[in-house]
Length: 533
Ligand SMILES: NC(=O)C1=CN([C@@H]2O[C@H](COP(=O)(O)OP(=O)(O)OC[C@H]3O[C@@H](n4cnc5c(N)ncnc54)[C@H](O)[C@@H]3O)[C@@H](O)[C@H]2O)C=CC1
Ligand SMILES: O=C(O)CCC(=O)C(=O)O
Image (cartoon, rainbow, N blue to C red; front, side, top):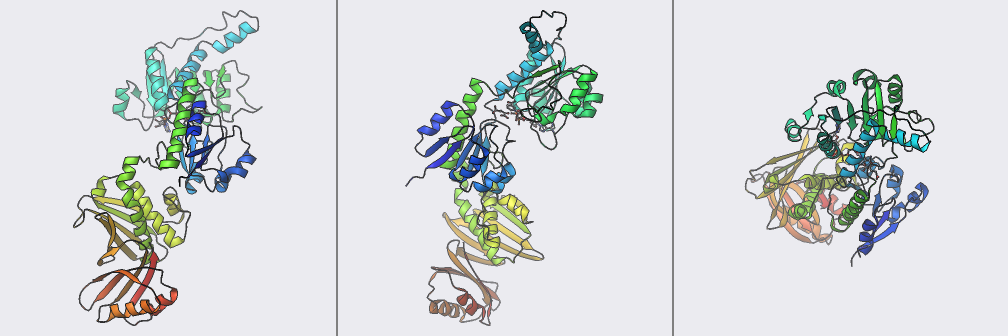
């Protein structure tokens, strides 16, 4: 029976995007534009997917109520209206449409720069008011001026192309931009923002708002570092500029003008210091508001959220590595198996694990194993801490919360296996190792601490450590048989004759505590643990 996935469209997206969802039999779509925060909280549990632009806030509170939610789609770039950390903790994938509005936003920012350079909005208003102010609105050319681009990503790059066509010298400041990429784009790369600020006649900002970028243009930079007479454009995020400091810098004349599409508070409140300034150009967050950009992001986000819910595909996620159907097929077989290994490790390891190390050898060492590691972690945390809410997405965040350190290593040489996955769990000075592989596609446990076994990594398992002496297998078999527990498969291992031995038993049912107590009471049985892996 096919499942229907219910998607809420909470903000306006293109009709084409909504039509795509409506036409899909696997999707049940609710279009509730402008849904109130109260209604969103009340109905959050109804939805598997939610699509937003920037109006609807997906808060931690909403995520706590949204017990069926799997995916949030943002028709646009910035995800500041979504509590991504809370989404990750709740195992909800957040995806956006990074490229769909790049051109529109770059064109809008460029338009703001030109309007500011030539006082277009002020001159227009003066005509509307019945004046003919030809002397008042003398502008400046862009030609041969120096432009500083702060944030040379998609939009910054498109802005640079347009600026060069106008004959501007372009400097880029972006800590993540390599020298070779800067050369390729024909821009000068600034190592330090403060070295570039005194050179720029124009500055444009194209980076996300993060704790590092908040008030990047702060009071000191706006009043002491920028070139006197600079003009500034911000079409990225409001908090990048200290608006109060900008108002003072405009007042003093250090900054000649500024053009904003984004604000510290949206919409700006009554206390908005810049509102009355003649040197300002404003638009109400219109960067992505074109027919083309909205068509792009609306259809793209509809596909992205639909594909995630229906096929498990992850693209353009801000909190999860991308996974396409081909990779999913390549590593899919290892996911459940590695989760089983994680559960097994939790069963054999002492409580309060502090470190989780996963080693890949052989063919797997060449693949993207991010999700496989998360699968192992999920199995361990679920079995050791009883956290059934754990999933591939929130496993690393939960490991951090539990104080569990994670390391991953890879080596090409697989030893005697084609692929080998080893999980090593450490608690204090105790270390537990389990390893497994796929034999002809069948999951097998091949190592438990220093015991080499060949156990089936599935279902109910019983692991018994005992002194190697005659009659032990019969003893275990009788205890299990007396309690009606049937053995499906058994694998034996011993360090050497008369030393310690390990028996890995697959059972048809879960043995009771009574069975385990009876086994543990045998003088030659050193330990007996059971798990459903
Ligand atoms: N006004 C509007 O309607 C729109 C605004 N935006 C905003 O524009 C911004 C840029 O968008 P894209 O170019 O698509 O993003 P992007 O991710 O392609 O580029 C952002 C760039 O900022 C750089 N960066 C990060 N931290 C930095 C720092 N501390 N200093 C300097 N550079 C830093 C990154 O390395 C990256 O190259 C985003 O904040 C986005 O939310 C995007 C679309 C529409
Ligand atoms: O949805 C919108 O119009 C806002 C676009 C935006 O700011 C973004 O994509 O980051």
